[in-house]
Amino acid sequence: MGVHPRSCTCNLSTNLFPLQSTLSLKDEIYESVFGASEQLSIEQYQEVFALTGNDVDSRIQQLELYGKSMEDGIRAYRKFANMVPGLAQLSFADSDTLIKGKDHIRLT
Image (cartoon, rainbow, N blue to C red; front, side, top):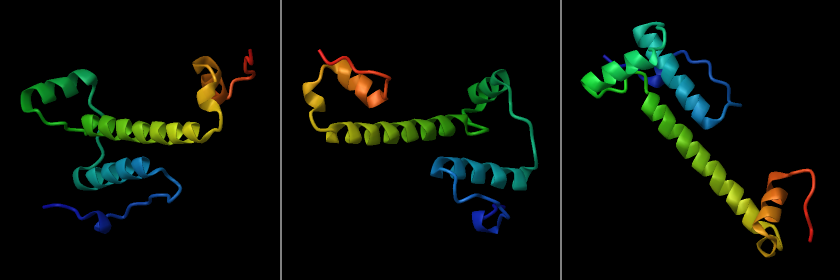
């Protein structure tokens, strides 16, 4: 017997990032079906995963989602950097400093 996400009385803020909303909704649905539980220790998780191959608390899925979120951020960062006029003519160190927003830029 499954619980449809729309039947869950979830209280998600629209201000959250989509990744946070997804993980929060998943946690709320899980808790509404199975009740509250403590997080498995690393050792417990590894033992269950080794025996069953089951990602019981979605650690692997969460890492994959975080990785995708980071990739998307890096792509947006790179797109912005490529739009800065003259950035390609600067040395790597200077362009890196400019993009990172350091206190000063060495213009030599």
